[in-house]
Length: 180
Image (cartoon, rainbow, N blue to C red; front, side, top):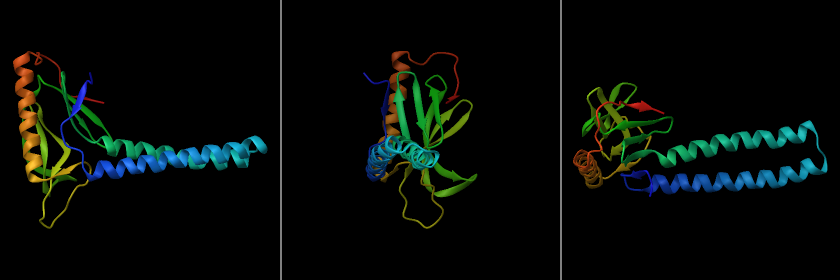
């Protein structure tokens, strides 16, 4: 049984980032095969750097694509996990007081889209999941963008998961938001 379950549905972004992962993996294989035969045939500093440079670029490419692919909201027995592109934050059920739709923040200013926020006793944490909007204005594209119906289902599912955690006794005293 998996520890964390993704709450937001898969969409076009996950298909695109999955394609980015496939392309990056194909290029890694190509560089290793072609570069490996060159290194075996004529080992030199130039051929080594010729292989190391593209591999370093592809390592960054694959890391970014994987993090973008996994960005979203996950629930588990212990709490809510918010996976952003650059960080992952786990908030225990004991600290979660609810969920709300509020404007997403970009450089501290609200954007045109609403984001799902996790409300805690210590404040609120923005998730990377946002509600699609057709209005004009600043947008922040860091995670899944859901339709209004899917976004409302997400909030209902999170509220139900919190109620289940409280009912099952998973909410314990102590703990806090633990950035990872």
